[in-house]
Length: 409
Image (cartoon, rainbow, N blue to C red; front, side, top):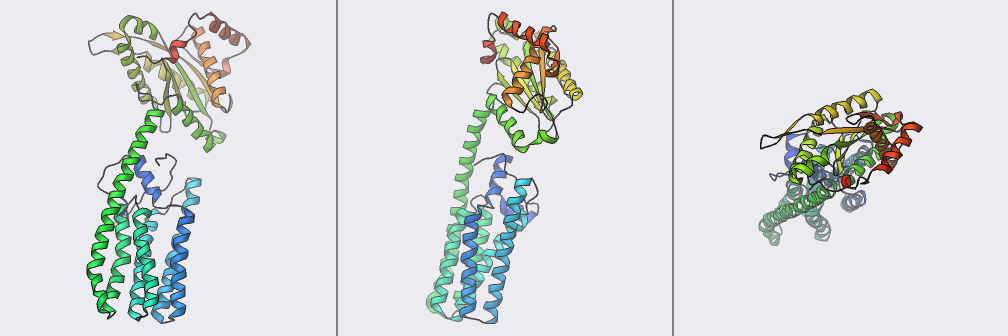
């Protein structure tokens, strides 16, 4: 349910913001997902419109009085307006544009009111068979609103009230004594449906929060809070799906800490874990909006950045080298130092596939290490000789970098 790709705009007006939210505090991504639920799905939306418009037209044909014809026209106008805004919203989300969420909320309340107004007018005609049909439609809508607007229980309450209260006025003014009971039934039903809407909302939010925590566990590194391998791959795929690299190249920086194994061996894994967490904190400071930093495992890190020019990518790499190589002050007053080597690949020049970019950045990383470590190298620097050196270094390692893919703790 929680999906970072939701693009429905948040309401801007004070009234619509109040209707679309509750006092319950939720993270921004959950709130965004709840706003998306206000729009629902087009097939269900069309079903509701067809039902209300068809009944309005039939009533106007059956009782062609000026009031009922005017109501029919109002019902059609509100329904078509809601449909137009719904279609616009679905298209806007696909192209990253703004959706008219405020109008969606206001028209939802208007739709509830026009449904109740129709029931009121038909009840006043004394045509009980027709009134039964219209009231059944209105009553069915009140139940559906608890689910239709489960993400916004205040809005659900407002729509239900819009349908029930005019219908109740019509019942009380109809002259039918037995319908006086609606003066008790309608408020009781409104209260019950509102309580149900809020209860369903709390259940939905609890489910979304649990799902969000699960996603975080599967996409975030537990030690550093950065993206893990799965999260990095997902971030790359998101860029790929948006085709950002077609017009704006981006860089992949592959970082490997120098001297970290000695810290683990000398000071223990607890200190090593603290150093890794501090490295992550320093990396976060370097990130621009939209950039992603992640830990592959062990002492390996990756930065996905929108910086695409070689000079800018190198500048970011050198900034990361300087930040990570600065001394680390531990809680006991001890100061430790580590280095970092960085390989950089730039998409789409060096590849459009995650594995290819990672391989080329990894090759550049080994070139940086071959130059004496604490260096930054570009994939474009790799020629036949340096590639041969890289292969020789791989074969010469007694421990084939397995420690780099194991958790520091």
